[in-house]
Image (cartoon, rainbow, N blue to C red; front, side, top):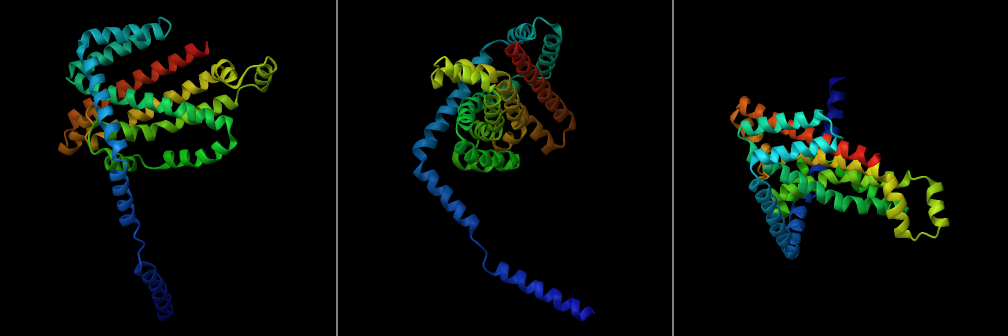
Length: 297
């Protein structure tokens, strides 16, 4: 019996040896392709990196120019009016931002917010038109849906590979990785929102002689606004979730403090930096949710 099992094992070992004998050079060819793309498309990637570097710098300088206490008051007032003059979010925003400032993480907060807001804006600018295209074209939906599935199922760390390969290290690859990771919800929810618009309304627009752009901007997008805003909310949260991961490739901000505390096994610093990220996440989530409610009303 043992000799029979041994022969079976030898048989499968020989199959494994045959499979491994000629390994496909996927890694080598991937490196060659990326190197050729970097050299051949440097006229695109280099200006992009320079432009995004300047955009990040200007955003940070603009926010940092405003004294922290003044900016806190302005954000609290904005929270008060966004929520329909309710004090809940305004009070939480005031206490949360004051806590972050008290802990000495205000500059890191500004860097993190700059990264998240730019990545989110780019995701919306790219995602909404793609979602509209998917809603209008069945062929586009068939082609784009698997790409979105791939983008959403890929582990977040994997996004760092193309980001570093094409943009080096720093804030720009952090924005790029966040952009890829955070765009799918905006695309999907835009597509869903437009497809859910009542057929009766679309037919009425057609009956009144609306052109395609008129029907899109005056009927479909306004009716789908609530769904699209829900997608934007998810995009903002996903962009914020990339903050710590992006710090691994040189992105400044609260994520770098969390990563540094992990490397030093400093639980205290890590806890404070982590709580600061949670506070920012809650504030941004509530802001976008209340904007959605206002749009719906």
